[in-house]
Image (spheres, each protein chain N blue to C red):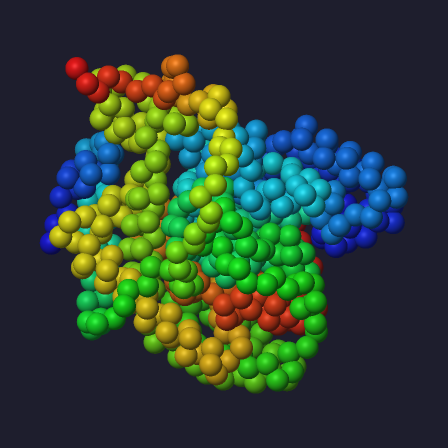
Length: 92
Length: 487
């Protein structure tokens, strides 16, 4: 098994340098090999645990409550205009 | 004893007796920080103006004869992963440089209601990913007991500041040992509460099914005081649990007679430093002498803990950290040509090496074709690990082990070998995977004078039992009273 690090970096929206691709590649191979020890265990039919404490759906009344003021939220944005977050053009 | 060396309960007593003001205490702490933090480098940000305003307010209350609480006017330090309204919160990451939250984490709000004074924000591994605080995007924190060594991590700034008397106590967070291991490395007390005991609202998420906020303190009594303040259900965190919160100060009894203590044999195999093992065995003898019932137990899936953890934690992190895209807050790279480049360059320049490594790993284990082999498999083995603890806790009340396999290692020793770094978390990780509480307390020193930590693990929501057993040990030993020679 060999990780296609460029593909994974693309999925993660990360630009990696050539040096990072090489070092991460070998380090992650080593880590994944270590993780293969889990295959020694037969887990067929076992329920996976996603939370250690059983939590059920938590519902609340559907009431309108004040949210954070728009100007406070936009004040810390890297770029904003007319009450919106501003990003590079995405539609030609 | 000097003012900055006091515990919460000691300083509280002086404030009540009007022998000292909160302002004087706060001034003393900032003086101490100016004297020692150039060498320790625990603080990322000092918030003097806010702190003195808060201290003055408490002093006025005292002057008027109002009754004050345990934390009123007490100068605390905060790990820089907790959102503080109007005060920069960076997670020690360049991607959050300049980020000033417009809201407080629930625990911060609770401490403000109790009139605590916040001295500043403390260093950590970037996004809490690390065991040495060397992954901070800004600075390396040094262990007050030996400046050439790491303070542990990820709450290394918090533990070092408490050990160096640069704050009276601090808050940290723990995803795989990040409160307990630095507490052990720095010779202080650190408690990771049961998952769901403390609200995570406003705690910047790393691995949401594992993260918890907890105290790092100079003694067990202070730990109980902070637990009283931060515990409880919060409707803003749907994973916090509606379970009654006891008064943890009532747990501080010097009595372990008849308490059943389990010693997990899997925690005492290869790789443990002999001095660490000796100190922990001595602590076990102490408990036996004090009437506890000692039993050997087995937690058979311990050897899989690191593998499970670094699949689940990185998977959750890759999802949680997708939000740092340069759009809503924090850093945005310059020089991009389109939206995709804005994302990839912002993240490439904003995140440090370890964070990138973990995002890549987490993305991979969740990706199509690998999900079942890694994430699902790890979550299934996590079930086995949880069952190990369920079965053990039918026979015992508390499980005792070392907090970390070795005392603090040298700065730079493990930075090039991430797997070795991950393996240093072997004793603390199972606790987070099972969601149980655990505390680390000082139980000895190596010949080189480095602190050694004892870990006590308990049943879900049984922090009171941990505090009681820890208090009994602490009050009959003097390890917690020793101070690093920093002068």
